[in-house]
Length: 99
Image 1: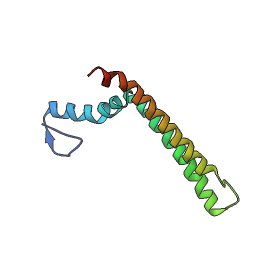
Image 2: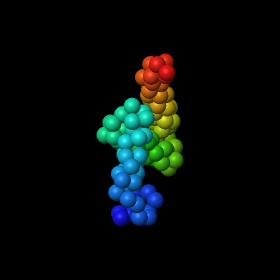
Image 3: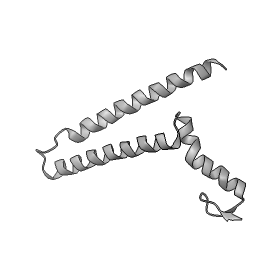
Image 4: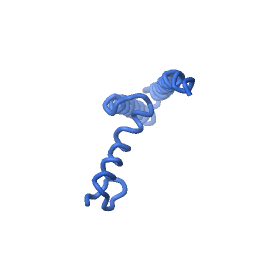
């Protein structure tokens, strides 16, 4: 028996592999990406969030600085997510029509 990642209790080797597949494959595949494509997008997105957070923090301390930086970045990120979702929906449409 090995100890599984989620949940932390003994699991069989097959169950451990299934859990690893769920963690690292299923969600990226659901959005039409490989693990690494999804990782690159998520890390890039987190960097954008971090920059927006730092700009908001600076603006909180010195209000005349970064007056619109954080909100502009959040709006741009929202547009990026909406465009990404539209692309994913369009990619799935032929699959749905085939059913």
